[in-house]
Image (tube, rainbow, N blue to C red):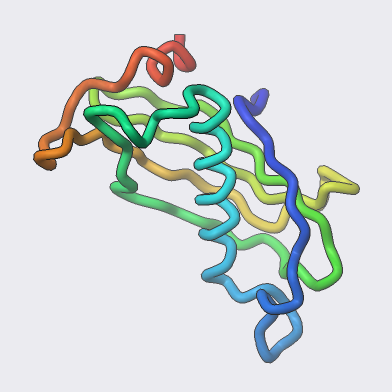
Length: 130
């Protein structure tokens, strides 16, 4: 499957735990940062609209510990579309060798309005699944 977006970043020393690898909670931050960069690439004012995405579910399969120093790439994939939700796959891998996969999984995003009610996917997101 071809990524809909990829974002690279450096692993920072402060993200390491006592065992000398990246703390598992940090993986979610990598996915979140990539997701925000992706939204910005699609529409730079997405957070100012009448509706915005929230995370309804997230799943991560940890494949291999990340150790410092390392540069990673997080790739996103359009997996499943609902009328008010989208499932976006994610893969965290080494920037230098895409065959080194650190984690993969998916995030279910639901769009809500300012009152907290679910709304239809915006056109620019729905179009990714056609």
